[in-house]
Length: 554
Image 1 (cartoon, helix red, strand yellow):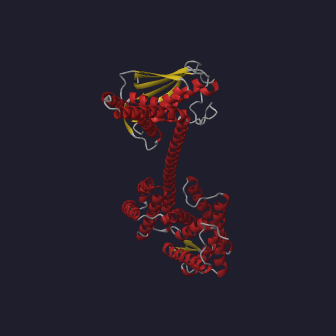
Image 2 (tube, rainbow, N blue to C red):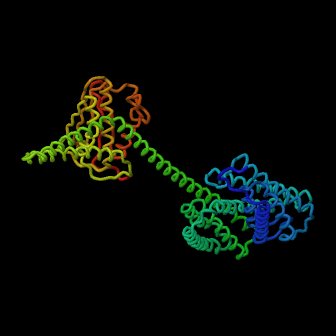
């Protein structure tokens, strides 16, 4: 039974055709690569500078499962018959194919099931596992094959080293170069962007040119002297790894390997020289892959960190919104009273004006005065509503030049009604010489409202009248503004002093524990700091310092 949203499976016949096509393509690629890379046969073992066909099949094993070992078995049999044109008997050929397929199938199954290799190769651990798997598979396969050939009398013990070393190095190089490249291509098969492809191709062509020049410099010298200059290949490979991560390293290594084999063939070097260069190529491959995956892993970590930071900012924004609504909902009755008063006064003034206008010979001067007062009352009610609306609105931070006096005055407009309803006086002492600040007006207003509202609730919890004082003063070292909020409430409990700015830390039964945490984040984002100056009963004081210039990253 299918569930909603599930993609229906492809028809059985279509899947069979697709699978058969893929198997045929891999088999054909294996044979073609065997033919291209083959040099000659040495007593039953193929001598190749590298084994790219094995790298292709091993990639399929790692990605799709060890069952791809059947392709490797069939490929080895076919290559022995049609590419190597071997003189070995069919029983030996089948044994060689079975040992080769069994070795790499066992290794692929081990790294998939036991070691948990991620075929995306997005971590250094996965690349190291793949390299070790290629080495172990090559050693196991080479050991078994040489032992078999020695057992049937085709290979002599003195020849084991000369026959097995090129085979092992060629297999390791084939896996190390081709397998990561194919696995990364599989990952990106659904994410090809034409512009990115064009850029990548142009960079690859430039890289290939640099590598060809380096190979020419390395191999034009006679007598094996080019070994001393092999380090020149490290420059383009490492540069590609730093530029494109693991993807760039894979492309650079494949280009360098193809170029190296082509140059060695053209100059007619013997098998020993091939092996020497391939040994150095193996070191280059390991270096390039490690540098590339380190860059990819670092970029992935940076991307995850940026996404987490974005989510944290979003959650902080949502928490700030919730805290503001919670704060305003707590002040709702007082705000309603604050708005009702000017509206009631405006209504009374309007009736007075109406009465004057209806009375013959009415006092028009008094009517004009009443109309002016009525407009002032309506404007006052509108200001209260506008401040509430601006306070509740939460958009992207808008940095601008801020007048501290304006921030304090508007914040007090919002909390004054609540304080009056609880019979708590608010006194504001402002230094007239305050410098302008740069920051988000609404955010700084929220900090001040949170502090004053907490002070009002603290004083009100004592069941008596009290006073909340707000003082602003200039700070010269460092240059900025310091704001103090003091109350004569019960103080702060000793167990809360050290964690009062932590999220969800609150001593109020109905509090969210977000106000001071959000205030601390806002102040920190403005390059300032907030702290408890005094936690004693009757003289509780919070202080906020804000610099004149906020951080550039705000």
